[in-house]
Length: 125
Image (cartoon, rainbow, N blue to C red; front, side, top):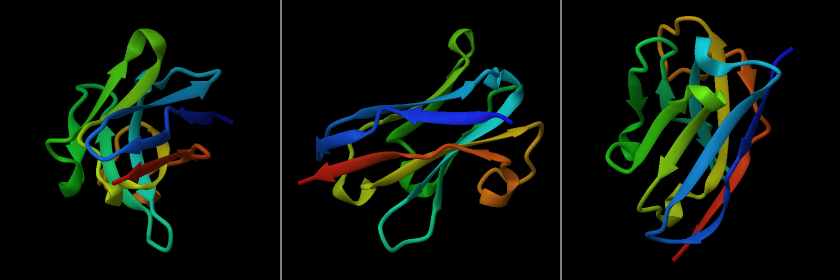
């Protein structure tokens, strides 16, 4: 059983940046399609970004385009989510998910087998 661990969350003021990290315990993420979803209080979990396992093609939710970047560091077997120009409505718990292989629809939560416990991001005005 693979366990994903997210880190890097915190409390920041609007306009600032955070970088979230996702690592797998005892495994390498290089062969997994990896995603980030987020869930704000009282809202559904929504797709943030994903990166495919091979060609490293990236995908983003509309709100994330131009502000967030997902990328891999294969040497560290880590997937990062760089978040810039954060706004109060980015406040949420951010979750890392992974699937060993090709994901047909990267923005669907059900495509991913493994999930972390989440890291909290709070953005104040």
